[in-house]
Length: 120
Image (tube, rainbow, N blue to C red; front, side):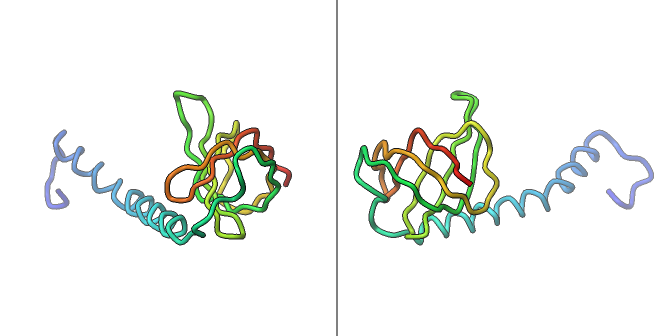
């Protein structure tokens, strides 16, 4: 493509693919690091179903759901427990203090929370 005098539509497509590679590689690496943190978890749940909890978390990812119009947030507590919950706003990766209720226990020792409020 670089050696050509004219660029065809097919060449533009290939240039667009090449331009997107660095961003894609960065996104894949970020996801791999998040998955490693999730895999390195405590083999226990945060609390019993129905319990109200207040805990510090590190947000690993927050993904928007078009079906539910909320962000599904995956996080890890200081104890190493993995929690996930739906939240109205996107939480950037970082540390937060939250309050919520344990809704359910899911596979791989993941605790689902509902009625989550970010305290700080």
